[in-house]
Image 1: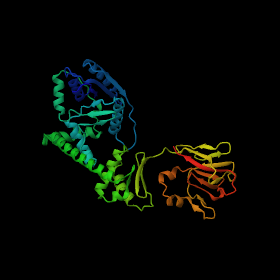
Image 2: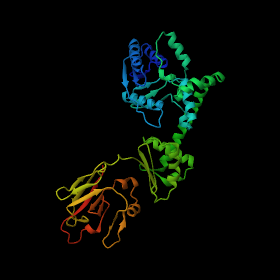
Image 3: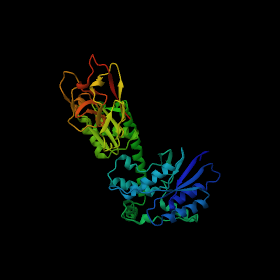
Image 4: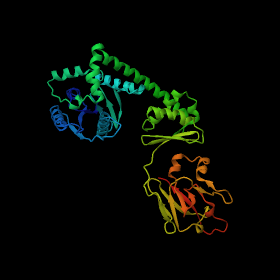
Length: 427
């Protein structure tokens, strides 16, 4: 232990976390500042009693404890185990203090279960690395000091110390994958291979080492392909498919974006990058979008859905600025002696709305009418930007596209007395 180290134990009240909390509490003369957090899921009838036990146990050990009550969001397509885990870790991360260490009581048998589950899910190297002994977590760190100890060792220590614990009744529900594996599969594995937990834990450490090498290689590849915050498609294409996917995975993770599943990552590394330069393909997952724009690949967060009333009336003569719904910002008609728009050619009331398809305008006097789609493609306007463009109409006639183009019908001439320029101030 080091001076001023703050450690927080994730305390469920079970035998393993009881061993961890008691062991840390009994380190004599330690300068460690120790406390405990208990997550109350409310998923079974004994949840209140379990929380009460944890309060008493922590009090006997002289450790302050805080109970975190969470609600597990039930969503289709996700297991109850995964949803409870996500809620638990979110609560723990939110309660952790800056640079504080969160210690969990995961042990070698938990690691064995995790590797088996990852294998059955078809996980890659990162998944087979299973649970690391330490990692950054929220504003602090997460450590698992018992990963090389077995459950049998921990239970024996707790019994010899005369400590009480509670058993989570959910551990008996074998319809949950981990519980089925623990009760029905792994006992037979251990009877044949008694050292299975230690051997698999060693394999997980090898996988973790390989994952660190892959991350380092991916960062170097992404760095060479960097084009500002985006990546150069041409540089990515020089990599073989597996290395390209690895670079994309690391780039996405390092950017703090959610990782796509294997199918989407394969599509991103293949068809999206191999498409024609003018195709501007995109791929969405987890609230974000990867956008191919000519030779650049960028990621952006998906905007919140626009309000249903995306059509806005803009009476501009008394009100030269118009707030737009959703996240699209503001339009302004700014007086400008060199502005392209003749204010006397604009009707008093304009209408602003989003694209619906088929819009056309004449961007040059004497020139042909052009489809907005072709203008956007020729000008290489990012697809994400196209969806947010505010279109300004005079009746049914499109007179301006954000601050990009205006229609020849409202263009200023040499004799125009009042000229202006449309400005789009984006959020």
